[in-house]
Every structure is written in structure tokens, then in C-alpha cells.
Length: 170
Image 1: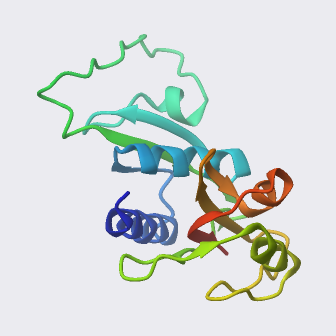
Image 2 (image 1 turned 90 degrees about the vertical axis):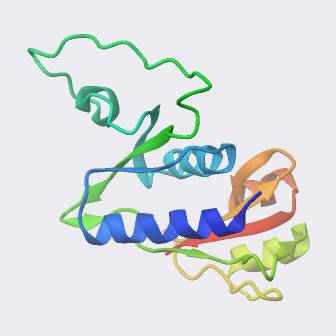
Image 3 (image 1 turned 120 degrees about the horizontal axis):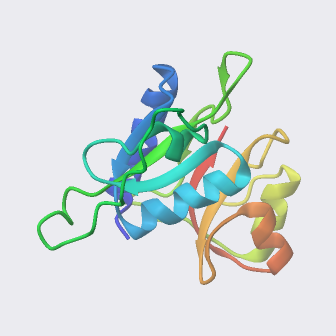
């Protein structure tokens, strides 16, 4: 698990939301895919699709079909194109504001922050626990890497799981 690459993805998502992009791409890895799917399940991004260096058709990722669009096949994964694979994310906006807001890393490559269930309960209630500040607003989320995958902090409390704190969405 490379936290260096994950912090670059967080910075890229912040820049993409500031530029008000509807579609952006990040490097394809299992960690990035799991975090993107967790963000999609929480409602921060609209869609996640694997693709090559060129974006997939707009109707496939943004959800609206085009009248004259032909059905395009999915690009097969071969040994030659594995390094150029990208994850294409559809960003959401509501009333001219980004739904994602700002995403910040909590764990860093030089300081990995692990938290147990009791510390996580305090964080969800709004209190600080170690290096992790409490959640202040209902729209704020904290994502953890656990044995069951990447989950949001409230899900971890329900399932009684602790783990490595990855990032915070403000």
C-alpha cells in the first residue's frame, strides 16, 4: 500500500474539484479503486470506471445515453497496456459547489496512524483520539483501511473494526 501515491490522488481530486471538472482520471491500482468505490458508496463521486488513457464514452461514466452513440467495446487488459490503465471518476456538483469538498490525508508515508474501535468511537462522536481529530459536521467522513476493505468510520464502528486511517473528506 503506497501512501505516497494515495496522497497524490487526494491532491489531484482537490485540484479537479477546484477546476470544476466533470470527469477526471487517476492511476489504476487496487487501493485507488477501493477508495474510489468507498467514495462512490458515500455519495461523493458519481461514477467509477476502468479505462485506458482516453476517457470512456460519456454515457457510460456520467449515466446519460447519447442518441447517436455507438456501443463501444471494453478495451481488453493486456501485458502491453497494464501500465497505462486509468480509473475514470465522475465528480458530483450541487448548486455550483463540489460535493466532494476537500480531501486530506491523515496517515502519511512517514507516520501511519492506526486506530482501534474505542478511539474510533470517540472520533465519530467528535472528540480527538491520538493524531486523529474528531468529526465536526454530518457531511465529514473518515476512511480507514481494514481487514474488510476500505470503509467509512461510521461503518467501522458498526462492524467493530479498527484499522489504518487513510484520509478525511471535509
